[in-house]
Figure 1 (cartoon, rainbow, N blue to C red):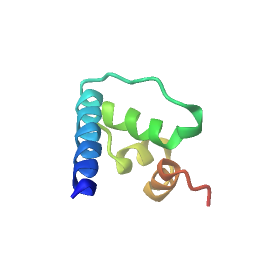
Figure 2: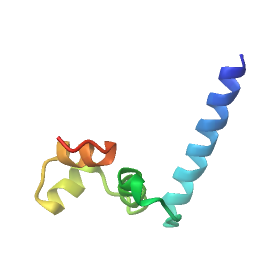
Figure 3: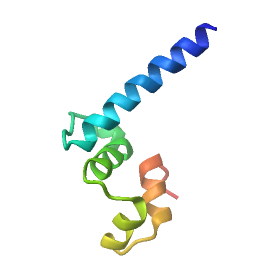
Figure 4: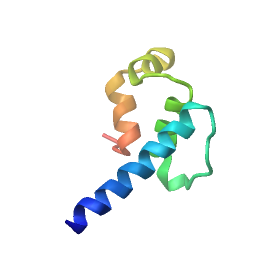
Amino acid sequence: MNDLFILRNELTSEISEYETLLVGYIPEFDFKGFGKLLIKLRISQHISQKSLAEKLHVSAAMISRDERGNTM
């Protein structure tokens, strides 16, 4: 049961952060977390992975990998 409360708190925090991003606020970040920053910037600008990939002339899979922090 305690795990459910922890999960609920994590989801509540993520939803709050998502809603903040949607209005354009971009919080400080740690450079180690570039993937998370990319996600936050993309969400704050209402851009999908596919749309960002098209603008950058790369594949959507590459954007997904970058957001997850995978290099290859």
